[in-house]
Length: 205
Image 1 (cartoon, one colour):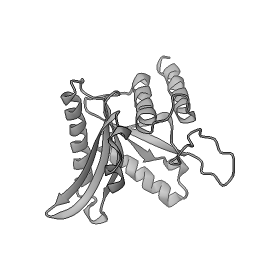
Image 2 (cartoon, helix red, strand yellow):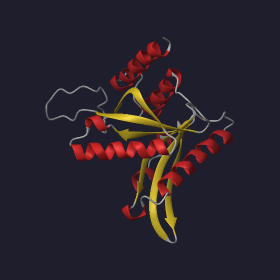
Image 3 (cartoon, rainbow, N blue to C red):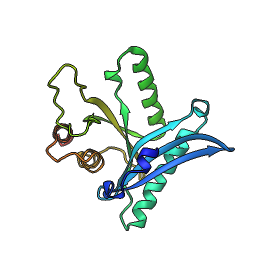
Image 4 (cartoon, rainbow, N blue to C red):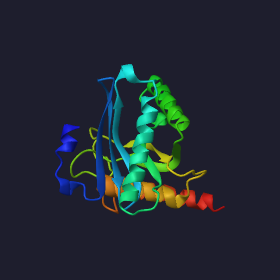
């Protein structure tokens, strides 16, 4: 949280940055760091955490709802229409290192669905490398880390029954280009867009 707070202002010109700490009855409960991507008109959850003793008491859902409300307030303050919602990343269960972790990820996805999130299962999304200067998605040596296949979720502000390919492209481009600052021709961006194009063909059948 401290490292994010000390980032120079010019590093986040595409976003309004929020860093929240939560207390309950004088005790620290958790935190959330999230951005409103002003040119894409949706929010992106960067980090969130609750202390173990405060889980399963409704705090997670409350933080989720308050964050989405803040995104709507950001859009309104800038004269933008109602934003698409609050988006974030979830670990993909199919790529878990073991069965215990796989079941943990499945349970987490179930909770997010119960909160009203839409899971973008058709989007081929990989989390970018957190290594400076490396964003091509290629693995040239066995010792290098491969990118993590992730799931995106969207907590819509207005009711949505189905995400359109245009919405999926907006979310993927906003996160990868505006948030992670990847180039338009990055492997990660092209991989996500290719899956959107495939979904578009299926969507229009």
